[in-house]
Each structure stands twice: as structure tokens, then as C-alpha cells.
Image (cartoon, rainbow, N blue to C red; front, top):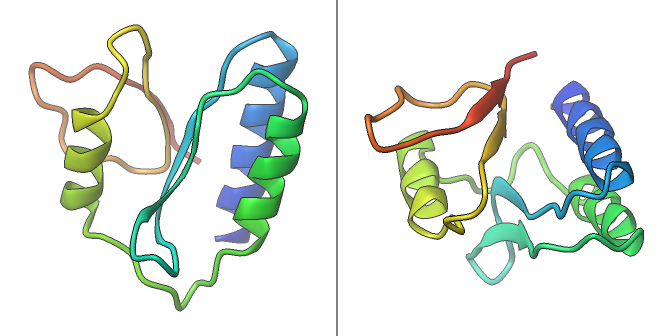
Length: 103
């Protein structure tokens, strides 16, 4: 899990440096029983928010099933955005498009 977190921070850092807005979704349930989500932002403080949020993840925490997480995420994806998946996604459906980085 640590490697995935470090890699996610690195990818987000490069995207923000290149002027991209980054909205981060993590398959992790918060104390309010909601999926961890950081809204779109281009500000440098976004990177601090990402690092702070990811540093609080507990490997023994609560997670959704992969299918539930992707259904939720894709149902709320902005039509002008392209999801970037770090890790292993479920099988792609015909109507879904994403970039995938698997480490």
C-alpha cells in the first residue's frame, strides 16, 4: 500500500506541475462512511491536501468492493475529464474510457 501511495503522490505532483486539475478518488471509506474524494483543484495546496489525505489511510480501514467503487466513480465523472487509474481496475466496459497505470 505504501508504494501505491507514493506513486499516486508522484503522479499527482507531476500533473499539478503541468497545470492539470486533479480530483482524487480513493477506494477508502472515511469516518462519515463516504468514499475519500478530493475535489478538482489546480492550486499548489492541492498537493498538500493529497499528501495529507493519503497519509491518514489505514490498511485495516473500510473499503468498497472494486466494482462498487468504479461504478460510483464513473457515475460521477465529469464529461470533460479522463480518469487515470493507478492500480488494477475491473474489466473495462464499452462506454468507459480511462488511462491506466499499473505498478
